[in-house]
Amino acid sequence: MPLQLYAHPFSSYCQKVLTALYENGTPFELQLLDGPDSGPMRELSARWPMKRFPMLVDDGRMVVEASCIIEYLQAHHPGPVRLIPDQADAALEVRMMDRFFDNYISTPQQKVVADRLRPEAVRDPHGVAEARRMLDTAYGWLDALMADRQWAAGEDFSLADCAAAPFLFYADWTHPIGDAFPNVKAYRRRLLARPSFARAVDEARPYRGYFPLGAPDRD
Ligand SMILES: N[C@@H](CCC(=O)N[C@@H](CS)C(=O)NCC(=O)O)C(=O)O
Image (cartoon, rainbow, N blue to C red):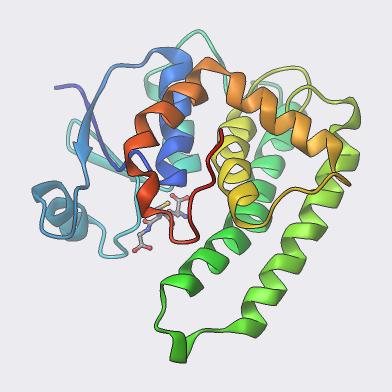
Protein backbone atom coordinates (compact mmCIF):
# COMPACT_ATOMS: atom_id res chain seq x y z
CA MET A 1 0.00 0.00 0.00
CA PRO A 2 1.57 3.35 -0.97
CA LEU A 3 1.88 6.18 1.52
CA GLN A 4 -1.43 8.00 1.93
CA LEU A 5 -1.28 11.78 2.24
CA TYR A 6 -4.45 13.46 3.46
CA ALA A 7 -4.06 16.93 2.11
CA HIS A 8 -5.35 19.79 0.03
CA PRO A 9 -3.12 21.30 -2.68
CA PHE A 10 -3.91 24.91 -1.68
CA SER A 11 -2.91 24.42 1.98
CA SER A 12 0.47 25.84 2.93
CA TYR A 13 1.28 23.09 5.44
CA CYS A 14 0.37 20.48 2.83
CA GLN A 15 2.63 22.20 0.30
CA LYS A 16 5.43 21.99 2.86
CA VAL A 17 5.13 18.18 2.84
CA LEU A 18 4.44 17.97 -0.91
CA THR A 19 7.67 19.88 -1.54
CA ALA A 20 9.58 17.30 0.53
CA LEU A 21 7.88 14.40 -1.29
CA TYR A 22 8.64 15.93 -4.71
CA GLU A 23 12.27 16.65 -3.74
CA ASN A 24 12.81 12.94 -3.30
CA GLY A 25 10.36 11.61 -5.87
CA THR A 26 8.68 9.67 -3.05
CA PRO A 27 5.56 7.81 -4.31
CA PHE A 28 2.33 8.49 -2.45
CA GLU A 29 -1.40 8.57 -2.95
CA LEU A 30 -3.27 11.83 -2.34
CA GLN A 31 -6.40 11.57 -0.22
CA LEU A 32 -7.95 14.85 -1.27
CA LEU A 33 -9.59 16.76 1.58
CA ASP A 34 -12.31 18.07 -0.63
CA GLY A 35 -14.75 19.70 1.79
CA PRO A 36 -16.05 18.72 5.22
CA ASP A 37 -18.22 15.86 3.95
CA SER A 38 -15.60 14.12 1.82
CA GLY A 39 -14.55 10.61 2.83
CA PRO A 40 -10.90 11.62 3.41
CA MET A 41 -12.00 14.51 5.67
CA ARG A 42 -14.17 12.17 7.73
CA GLU A 43 -11.21 9.77 8.10
CA LEU A 44 -8.92 12.63 9.12
CA SER A 45 -11.41 13.86 11.75
CA ALA A 46 -11.82 10.36 13.15
CA ARG A 47 -8.08 9.83 13.55
CA TRP A 48 -7.10 13.39 14.46
CA PRO A 49 -9.90 15.41 16.06
CA MET A 50 -7.78 18.55 15.86
CA LYS A 51 -8.67 18.32 12.14
CA ARG A 52 -5.48 20.00 11.04
CA PHE A 53 -3.76 18.75 7.93
CA PRO A 54 -1.69 17.26 6.34
CA MET A 55 -1.82 13.75 7.79
CA LEU A 56 0.31 10.87 6.54
CA VAL A 57 -0.75 7.27 6.93
CA ASP A 58 1.86 4.59 6.34
CA ASP A 59 0.60 1.04 6.56
CA GLY A 60 -1.92 2.08 9.23
CA ARG A 61 0.46 4.32 11.17
CA MET A 62 -0.61 7.96 11.43
CA VAL A 63 1.89 10.81 11.38
CA VAL A 64 0.76 14.42 11.79
CA GLU A 65 2.44 17.83 11.93
CA ALA A 66 4.21 18.74 8.70
CA SER A 67 7.72 18.89 10.19
CA CYS A 68 7.26 15.48 11.83
CA ILE A 69 5.95 14.01 8.58
CA ILE A 70 9.09 15.19 6.80
CA GLU A 71 11.26 13.73 9.60
CA TYR A 72 9.31 10.48 9.28
CA LEU A 73 9.79 10.35 5.52
CA GLN A 74 13.52 10.76 5.91
CA ALA A 75 13.70 8.04 8.56
CA HIS A 76 11.43 5.50 6.85
CA HIS A 77 11.29 6.40 3.14
CA PRO A 78 14.58 8.17 2.46
CA GLY A 79 15.51 9.49 -0.95
CA PRO A 80 18.60 11.11 -2.45
CA VAL A 81 17.95 14.54 -0.89
CA ARG A 82 18.58 14.62 2.86
CA LEU A 83 16.29 17.34 4.17
CA ILE A 84 17.59 17.03 7.74
CA PRO A 85 21.36 16.73 7.94
CA ASP A 86 22.95 13.91 9.93
CA GLN A 87 25.39 16.18 11.74
CA ALA A 88 23.80 17.37 15.01
CA ASP A 89 24.60 21.09 14.83
CA ALA A 90 23.59 21.33 11.19
CA ALA A 91 20.33 19.51 12.00
CA LEU A 92 19.69 21.93 14.88
CA GLU A 93 20.06 24.91 12.54
CA VAL A 94 17.59 23.34 10.11
CA ARG A 95 15.06 22.63 12.86
CA MET A 96 15.48 26.10 14.34
CA MET A 97 14.80 27.73 10.98
CA ASP A 98 11.84 25.40 10.45
CA ARG A 99 10.38 26.60 13.79
CA PHE A 100 11.02 30.21 12.73
CA PHE A 101 9.00 29.79 9.53
CA ASP A 102 6.13 27.97 11.29
CA ASN A 103 5.88 30.30 14.27
CA TYR A 104 6.85 33.72 12.98
CA ILE A 105 5.85 33.65 9.29
CA SER A 106 3.01 31.13 9.00
CA THR A 107 1.26 31.76 12.33
CA PRO A 108 0.87 35.54 11.88
CA GLN A 109 0.05 35.07 8.18
CA GLN A 110 -2.74 32.64 9.06
CA LYS A 111 -4.01 35.01 11.75
CA VAL A 112 -4.58 37.74 9.15
CA VAL A 113 -6.31 35.34 6.76
CA ALA A 114 -8.45 33.67 9.45
CA ASP A 115 -9.60 37.04 10.71
CA ARG A 116 -10.91 37.91 7.25
CA LEU A 117 -13.01 34.74 7.27
CA ARG A 118 -14.75 35.74 10.53
CA PRO A 119 -18.02 37.62 10.58
CA GLU A 120 -17.21 41.33 10.70
CA ALA A 121 -18.66 41.78 14.19
CA VAL A 122 -16.16 39.37 15.77
CA ARG A 123 -13.01 40.40 13.93
CA ASP A 124 -9.89 41.14 15.92
CA PRO A 125 -8.18 44.25 14.51
CA HIS A 126 -5.75 44.45 17.43
CA GLY A 127 -4.60 40.85 16.91
CA VAL A 128 -4.29 41.43 13.16
CA ALA A 129 -2.15 44.53 13.71
CA GLU A 130 0.07 42.52 16.06
CA ALA A 131 0.36 39.75 13.45
CA ARG A 132 1.35 42.26 10.77
CA ARG A 133 3.99 43.73 13.10
CA MET A 134 5.35 40.23 13.71
CA LEU A 135 5.59 39.64 9.97
CA ASP A 136 7.59 42.86 9.54
CA THR A 137 9.89 41.87 12.40
CA ALA A 138 10.34 38.39 10.93
CA TYR A 139 11.03 39.76 7.43
CA GLY A 140 13.68 42.05 8.91
CA TRP A 141 15.43 39.30 10.84
CA LEU A 142 15.33 36.95 7.86
CA ASP A 143 16.60 39.62 5.48
CA ALA A 144 19.80 40.07 7.48
CA LEU A 145 20.28 36.31 7.72
CA MET A 146 19.72 35.65 4.00
CA ALA A 147 22.32 38.26 2.94
CA ASP A 148 24.87 35.47 2.62
CA ARG A 149 22.75 32.32 2.46
CA GLN A 150 21.43 30.51 -0.57
CA TRP A 151 18.97 28.42 1.44
CA ALA A 152 17.53 28.96 4.91
CA ALA A 153 20.08 26.89 6.78
CA GLY A 154 23.04 27.46 4.46
CA GLU A 155 24.20 25.78 1.27
CA ASP A 156 21.79 22.85 1.12
CA PHE A 157 18.04 22.80 0.52
CA SER A 158 16.40 21.40 3.67
CA LEU A 159 13.27 20.92 5.75
CA ALA A 160 13.50 24.64 6.58
CA ASP A 161 13.14 25.55 2.90
CA CYS A 162 10.15 23.20 2.56
CA ALA A 163 8.55 25.37 5.27
CA ALA A 164 9.79 28.70 3.95
CA ALA A 165 8.50 28.14 0.43
CA PRO A 166 4.72 28.06 1.01
CA PHE A 167 4.81 30.35 4.03
CA LEU A 168 6.71 33.17 2.29
CA PHE A 169 4.60 32.55 -0.81
CA TYR A 170 1.35 33.28 1.03
CA ALA A 171 2.90 35.81 3.44
CA ASP A 172 3.76 38.03 0.49
CA TRP A 173 0.15 37.85 -0.69
CA THR A 174 -1.06 38.67 2.83
CA HIS A 175 1.43 41.29 4.00
CA PRO A 176 3.71 42.20 1.06
CA ILE A 177 7.45 41.75 1.54
CA GLY A 178 8.56 45.34 0.94
CA ASP A 179 11.60 46.63 -0.94
CA ALA A 180 13.31 47.06 2.43
CA PHE A 181 13.77 43.27 2.43
CA PRO A 182 15.59 42.52 -0.86
CA ASN A 183 17.20 39.32 0.42
CA VAL A 184 13.84 37.88 1.47
CA LYS A 185 12.35 38.79 -1.90
CA ALA A 186 15.27 37.13 -3.71
CA TYR A 187 15.01 34.04 -1.50
CA ARG A 188 11.28 33.79 -2.21
CA ARG A 189 12.08 33.92 -5.96
CA ARG A 190 14.65 31.11 -5.55
CA LEU A 191 12.05 29.03 -3.73
CA LEU A 192 9.50 29.60 -6.50
CA ALA A 193 12.07 28.45 -9.06
CA ARG A 194 12.77 25.20 -7.19
CA PRO A 195 11.03 22.46 -9.25
CA SER A 196 9.57 20.67 -6.21
CA PHE A 197 7.83 23.79 -4.91
CA ALA A 198 6.98 25.09 -8.40
CA ARG A 199 5.06 21.84 -8.92
CA ALA A 200 3.13 22.33 -5.66
CA VAL A 201 2.29 25.91 -6.69
CA ASP A 202 1.09 24.77 -10.12
CA GLU A 203 -1.11 22.06 -8.65
CA ALA A 204 -2.74 24.66 -6.39
CA ARG A 205 -3.49 27.18 -9.16
CA PRO A 206 -7.10 26.04 -9.69
CA TYR A 207 -7.88 26.92 -6.06
CA ARG A 208 -6.63 30.51 -5.97
CA GLY A 209 -10.20 31.76 -5.73
CA TYR A 210 -10.21 30.35 -2.18
CA PHE A 211 -7.75 32.99 -0.97
CA PRO A 212 -9.95 35.31 1.12
CA LEU A 213 -7.79 38.41 0.69
CA GLY A 214 -7.87 38.02 -3.11
CA ALA A 215 -4.97 36.22 -4.77
CA PRO A 216 -2.77 38.69 -6.67
CA ASP A 217 -2.33 38.10 -10.39
CA ARG A 218 1.29 36.97 -10.20
CA ASP A 219 3.52 34.08 -9.10
N1 LIG B 1 0.85 22.50 13.15
C1 LIG B 1 0.22 21.93 11.98
C2 LIG B 1 -0.58 23.02 11.31
C3 LIG B 1 -1.43 22.50 10.18
C4 LIG B 1 -2.47 23.52 9.71
O1 LIG B 1 -2.73 24.55 10.35
N2 LIG B 1 -3.08 23.19 8.59
C5 LIG B 1 -4.16 24.00 8.09
C6 LIG B 1 -4.13 23.99 6.58
S1 LIG B 1 -2.74 24.94 5.97
C7 LIG B 1 -5.47 23.40 8.52
O2 LIG B 1 -5.51 22.26 8.90
N3 LIG B 1 -6.54 24.17 8.47
C8 LIG B 1 -7.85 23.67 8.79
C9 LIG B 1 -8.52 24.44 9.88
O3 LIG B 1 -7.92 25.42 10.36
O4 LIG B 1 -9.62 24.06 10.24
C10 LIG B 1 1.31 21.35 11.07
O5 LIG B 1 2.48 21.73 11.21
O6 LIG B 1 1.01 20.49 10.23
